[in-house]
Amino acid sequence: MTAPLPVGVIGVGALGQHHARHLASLGDVRLVGVYDSDAGRAVKIAAGLGTRAFRDMDRLLDQIEAVTVAVPTQAHAEVGLHALSRGVPVLMEKPLASSLAEADELITAAKRQRVQLQVGHIERYNRALRAAEAYLDGPRYIESLRLAPFQPRGTDVAVVLDLMIHDLDLVLHLTGSVAIEVRASGLPVLSPHLDIANARVEFANGAVALATASRVARDRVRRLRLFQPNGYFSLDLATGGGEFMRVRNGWEPGTGRELADVVEQIVLQAPEADALSLELQSFVHAVRGQHEVVVRGEEGRAALELALRVADAVRTPPMAVATH
Image (cartoon, rainbow, N blue to C red; front, side, top):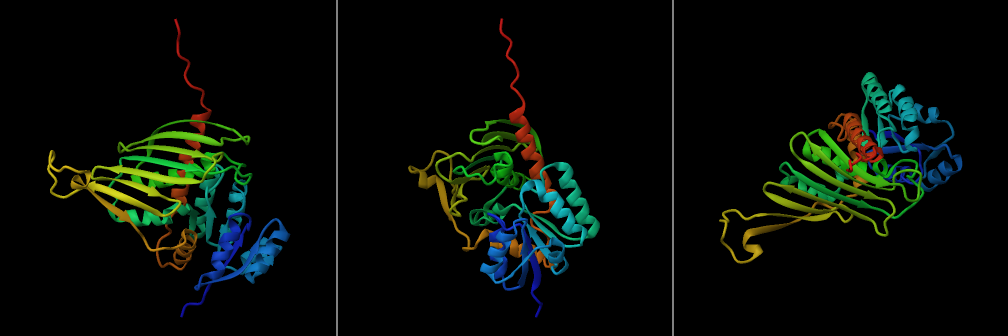
């Protein structure tokens, strides 16, 4: 029987504490301990999970074979590079870094040390996406809507990097193409950075994506609609449910009296599972060499690059219209 993998968590704030909680419950993992710049918070989280709070990051890194990093975005590169330089595989919360240069440094460091670098784009494990996978066949038009009530956490970056990047990663994954044109609009409302944004992205393969994200909404919404030549998906990422509608086999144009005569409706269901637990388990399996990293550093960089292009498009003033 394989011994449990010794793992640690760096950063146990709003997200990191959940990393630690799930890791503590995984059967093939031993949560060695946690580290946080706020020592009191680290002690509190560790005590609740029956593990150790380290006051020195290096002492934690000395005793583990993999680490998840959930510190503020601006510190991703510093902490990630430090762990990678010690030969410790890293699961980095999204976004991979605060700049493309930092993202490149992380990717290069992981390759140099020949260790895994995974990015925490958790929606890849969403139950609705897992259920839709068997029916996906090159979506050509994608609409995403991601709304959340305002909270101070996450406002150190624009909503594009905080929320929309989840959907931009999914779009890149689902289209398998590169963005050739980005148009966007948005504005700050309750923070110094963009709090609401809308983007239209065209891809080299002809696919088009419309993405809207807001962190000043009344309700929490996470929806995704996908259109492909043989059907249409309506996915609720918040509940993990959805449906796929496609033309019935053998239907002839002009025949049938009801919509049901033309369209087959498939309720999408996948086994119940916590997305974060699946993400962490996939990281452990990748570190053990049991399968490839699900969201590689390069994919995290691509999502970051597209998010930064959206943010830049918002900041670009509209072209002046000549008047006569």
